[in-house]
Amino acid sequence: MPEMEHPGKAEAMTTSLGAFVLGTPDPPALADSYRALLAWEEVERSPEWVRLKALGQERPSLSFQLEADHVPPTWPQRSGTQQMQAHLDVQVDDLEAETERACALGATLEEHQPQKDVRVLRDPHGHPFCLFLPGA
Image 1 (tube, rainbow, N blue to C red):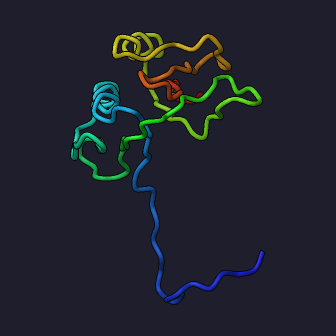
Image 2 (cartoon, helix red, strand yellow):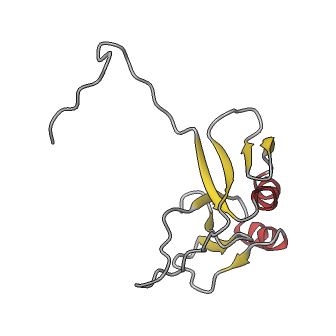
């Protein structure tokens, strides 16, 4: 692979992940679900865009943007269907209790569970996410 030219190469370049964004037909509703699940705070809201952040830190954040034609991915993956491009992994201390709490907040538990210490769920708008125990 050829070396890329970088403007100001002598200066140190710093990068970091700023946010993860989920497309959804209803950003405020989905943000409310994740805000309750993660105990994060809302820092920006409109009908088309909502941004959450962890208490005490600005970034990375979790944002929700309007995608009126959002099609939830298939899980587990099957050829010829909407493919999952990414998912969130959420570390928890009590897998069973947090799975129950996530379901009470509108998530659904997937039938296919590929690992003992991980639970695959879907948020209220169909995005897969995983709850997992430390070390899993």
